[in-house]
Image (cartoon, rainbow, N blue to C red; front, side):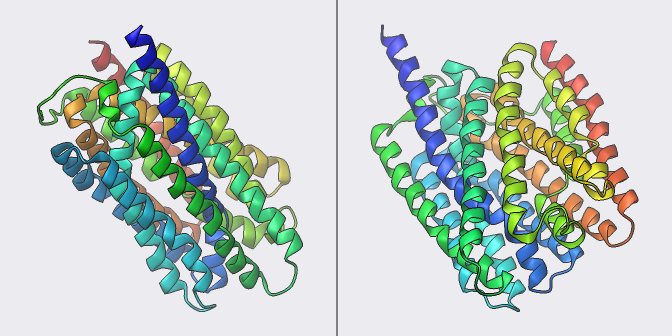
Length: 400
């Protein structure tokens, strides 16, 4: 009976933290849906947007290794999570106060946002993984991503409605008002986070093992996996570049006011894909990553070279599938490959490699955008496909 009760509480914790993530993503992904266009309006080039997006990810991902190690050493998971959420969310409404030529200030706020995410992410993923050990890692992280992306769908829809009714002022002023409106879900996130903390002060009890700290041991399967996801990260284009491209070249297909709807559609696909691939991962393991890579790889050709509504729609669907697989399976795999006492370090090491590759990829692909779109799309797809043999080898090592 005790185990049943704990399993029930484990799922309650996963769902409650998922609701926190839902409001958090409502804030962050709404901002993401217009950030590329916002920076472009302030005069930032494609290469600059790619560089800044990549730099933000580099800061966000690389610092997670330090944050993860600190979380494992101190076991102060909740304080780290709360501080990180506060840093991450306050920067988004602050974009409303950036001037029309202030793209540098906007870029700084973006980097600070990613810093806050770096502080909280390993600790957050670790305490969710404790509950996931009772419910299945793929299922748990799939449900988390489903709720994440439910927020990511609702947020851009909210911005779309706001922009429908706020017709006065320039496009820049309307975007600024949208950033200010995102203070509401940001505050709700922090309130719900405190509620979750009060109800579950010790989530590590869901996985009662490893009372002493054991350093992370890096095996060959983990190395192969890290190389594979790094290739994926290098080739997977940041949505800021997608939004900028659509804003510049597809205004006849997607007007500026409808950009949030496009992102909302991508997040809806992400949510469904994350839940589906999460459940499949618990059955078939790393092989599921192979399927997701094959499906997602061609998206850059359709989005950047298609020049039609059907091509853009298909490309955005493929992008959403790739993102959904990334957010559910990649975390579930780290959970299965690392011991409890060093799991935050494992998440941090994964994030360091992923973020560095994302930074290089965003920078290089952003630069290639200004040179040759076909070359950019080819590099993007090739890198994602090159990850497949490494996923397969990692799966074999895992079975062995």
